[in-house]
Image 1 (cartoon, rainbow, N blue to C red):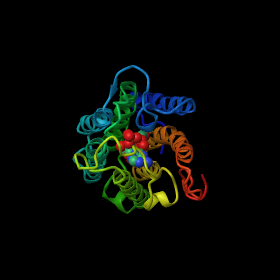
Image 2 (cartoon, protein in one colour; image 1 turned 120 degrees about the horizontal axis):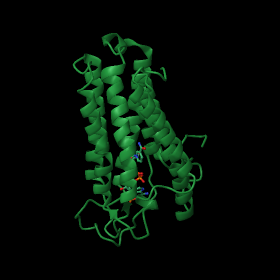
Image 3 (tube, protein in one colour; image 1 turned 60 degrees about the vertical axis):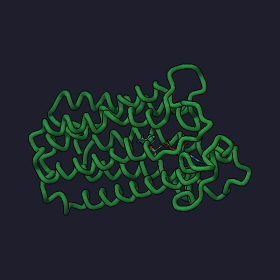
Length: 267
Ligand code: NDP
């Protein structure tokens, strides 16, 4: 993994990207992004969360596809495999999960437009960094790479993270009534205590799964593009997980006392 790829535009933007990740880490110490349980309460343009999520994630697959097909290796097996993994990941994050999300009946739109606009910088850069690296700047991504320990270990970590993330999001969904069912009304509590799966050990297993996914991605692509999105994800989700844990403890007297915030048995 080298900082200099020889592509000055790429290297410069990557440096700016890491500065952006540091800015997110700094900003997160002052408060969480305004959506969900920490959603916007002030005036401003606020969106329905389904729309907010779809819009925010859209640049990731678009910029990835745009730059990927301009790279000289875009017809090679391993880059194409990574293209498929990327599109599956964003089909879930940017479309399936938002569409399945159960929005509580009594909740006003609170997904701040500023979160979407800020998110576009991260998702747009993320698509460019990863696609251009994979299809243009990484000659080592030949079929031999599929038996390299960095691919095997990284991809295993990615799969564990992705599975944990998808399962944990499904547990949260199951806490709310099905849309338009008899019990789907504003009398139902917006939040309940989640149990089972990763929730046996931590309050935010979906965030842990998301971080593991990008850690695995950074390893199996052996790229600073992967380190960039891992850094952005940790900068964003580590403080949010700590705040979410405190929020649960305050809201529910019977919240499981042995549950950690994010890392089982440790944090
Ligand atoms: P949350 O866990 O906060 O919320 C997910 C959904 O579950 C929302 O619809 C939320 O409703 C609902 N929900 C949350 N807690 C409860 C509860 N206790 N009872 C009932 N319903 C609940 O996740 P995020 O919205 O922050 O993230 C969604 C996904 O996106 C996650 O998988 C996350 O890992 C990923 N993500 C990735 C990021 C990255 O940087 N790569 C950044 C942020 C998220 P409501 O909206 O009403 O709170």
